Length: 128
Image 1: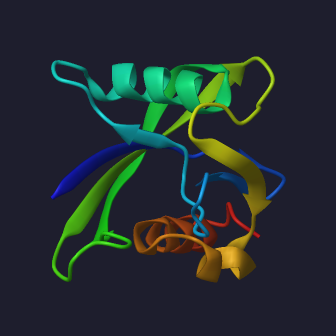
Image 2 (image 1 turned 135 degrees about the horizontal axis):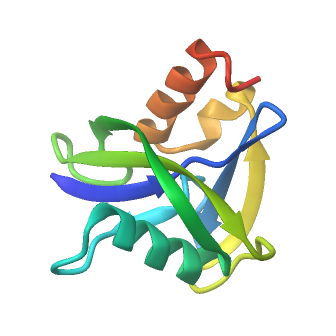
């Protein structure tokens, strides 16, 4: 099981996604925790590293599981998703090549676990 923390940032019915250098699939910004980190500490660190902004006021959106993209069959990812406000200007940093704003119509361009999150957001009326 791959344990990841992710930021769900919605704006005008679209959700912010990121693509790493050399990859063709988009995912929700975030990543794996370092030893001893809490969910929120991981979220703050990963978003600072990937997007150059400071998140605060994190609220749990949900926990989602699916087959891990690009991994052996049966290897799963558990993604704990948070919403949060931020300060700064969003810009790709570190391993991030590109940021984009996706709607439900873009679900075929994201990882399997992100598709599940998209479905959750769409059924809640939050994603166009």
